[in-house]
Length: 197
Image (cartoon, rainbow, N blue to C red; front, side):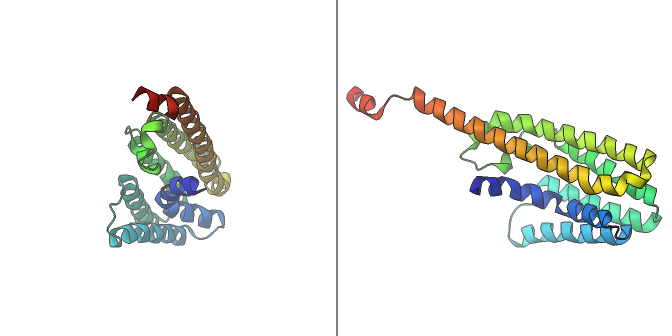
């Protein structure tokens, strides 16, 4: 459970501003209020990290910048179609950032990284693919199925991220256990090591 919480915490904090926005939109809160609330949450998270003297990860800075730009655009245009298509830009930018090799390494304890780094790299690219898919689906729903957009944005992005996170967590945990067991089997027993000395 401790490993699960260690892994999920940065994921939740990176996306919390977007999650707040999506939930409020799904609850049919005014777009401007939802955008302002999401921006306030994203800004508070970055400020909290700075106050604690911790470095703010690039994805969190990007998330904050995009939420602030989106909030300003929503306020200036007051055009729901613009607001609905806007998350596609967010997902495209985040997906592009996720193409950087090793970006997921901060989601695992440093001591465990050598054991599963290849799997973390693989899932980093899978996450990028999910962001690109979400961007395309959001644009399709926003343009051609406008009435269904609040339900889509309130469900699919978060549900797909949770599903991928659970799949990744289970895969990484199983891989680590299998590799640890294989390493233990390959090592000579303690009595054999003592007799060789």
